[in-house]
Image 1 (spheres, rainbow, N blue to C red):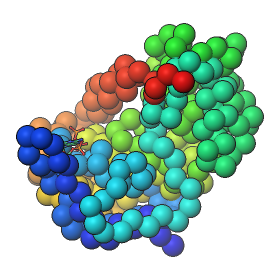
Image 2 (image 1 turned 30 degrees about the horizontal axis):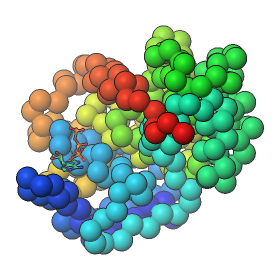
Image 3 (image 1 turned 120 degrees about the horizontal axis):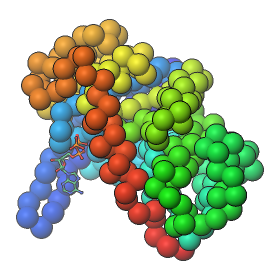
Image 4 (image 1 turned 30 degrees about the vertical axis):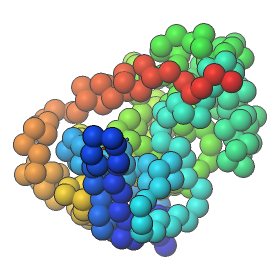
Length: 248
Ligand SMILES: Nc1ncnc2c1ncn2[C@@H]1O[C@H](COP(=O)(O)OP(=O)(O)OP(=O)(O)O)[C@@H](O)[C@H]1O
């Protein structure tokens, strides 16, 4: 059964200095329970695709069908309010999505080793705590479909490893759709590989075939021996630097 289907989707950004057409006739089907890693060069529309799938941006035309609950993008800060505590934020996000806030707060407190900070405002968190909170919170609710734009897991040291393990656990019970520029991330977290290029998404049962096409298209891609970690970390740093959503 399908989890997400895009049919003939078009998306153009319009700005005062001109417009940018990202997709014109995009079709894609993502199956339930299958983890898909989407490779794409810079500016091909990876973020736009994740936003369309998640519903935070609308297509100009075409249809997007979703079968099941869908997470906000991993480590997304938009849903959080800096002046609310970690617990209050989790309760809010859980309620909006129809889940149990207590269970989510309990999970994040334990997994991210928050201690008393769970009852302090997000604005008081250190950079590292903020990162832990964001990643743990991303996987705290039992969504059917998890989506991620480049940052799939994060944090530092031992937390980082546990976070990667958590993604593997969630992936075994849910559908995971993520974009990346790191072939290694596909090998680690995807069942199926996809390449976004020229407004089209090509899917490959064999991860290696997706990586080969990506390399042929994007000559700046990291070599296979590189674990892609620098780029992942750049992306995480960008994410945790962003302020939380509007002050309540
Ligand atoms: N809000 C916007 N207004 C105008 N143009 C936009 C907007 N958002 C994205 N674009 C443009 O649309 C194209 C696709 O952007 P998008 O962020 O989806 O690509 P991406 O593959 O995620 O890029 P990157 O790898 O650099 O993160 C880019 O050319 C970008 O400049």
